[in-house]
Image 1: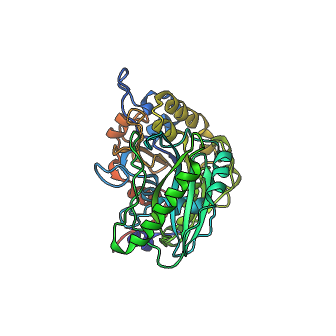
Image 2: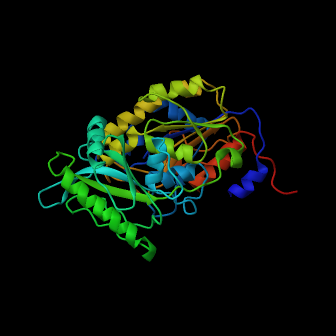
Image 3: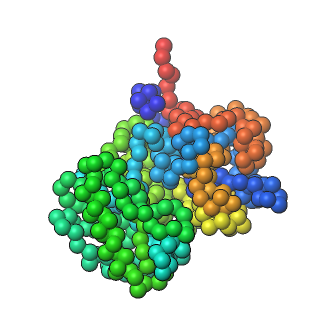
Length: 399
């Protein structure tokens, strides 16, 4: 689709905003029968839904629970099956680490294991970032033969491991079993050429285990998303948009940087993020704005906290709408139901607003209403072409 869109795009002065409430989709509460989004008081999102078009999006495909990387790439219009990008690269780019073409990067979690080596907490209680930095300094003592090793703190329990040297391969399995009560997994090669790299990573993990044995709660590590740096076409090349990203968490800044967006300095709160958009609104055509707290609450299994996060976002939304953008989309990169405590395969609510919307039957912004909406069930990759069309930025296809 991007090849077709590239030939249809025209430029004008329109402004587009994509507001991503991470993990937005949910499941019904057992008592009320309403999801987190349906439970929240959202007068501003409801007004957008009433005036715009609603639907549900699938980030990757039916039954597939996406990571944040493929979920966001799909929203940006990139086929996540074609551009399968490891989380390690995204985390590294998010902290401005100077990745080289042959580096292998992995996203790390500090975690807690018990005396038998079983995982008790995959996120080590979300340790403070300053504790993370001290532990990363400790892990920098580890040396591997013939390979440069870089360990960089990201945020809370997250860090980046980068290996640099000749012949390294990224075709490796992860050590994170994605559940508790079991030990971390050994790294295994998925291709014979990666056997040597797998052995090096396993050696690093074993040394990390020894160094962290006396720490609490972060006494072990989990590694995910081994990858090398790909080179997808940029937003400017495909969409002829001058695009900016406003995101607090490094991974999402990395995703934006990967596709050529300008990553703007911003604060830690959503109010500060929206102010950053306002401060730079005249400079860019397209803004990607990310909100993490909805996903965090869902992963923690905290229904009420996710409701509160949605209500906070709704209360602040007029700050974006008062800028008078031509097109606004509010959606999520995936669903993270509090009842499920993880990313899930459930389609994600989406609302698109512009002056050119054809009225549909949705009256509120929620899963049930979005199911009735005019957008229907669409692939997430369809949202960028729809935004461009509603912004008057696509010419006709064919004679």
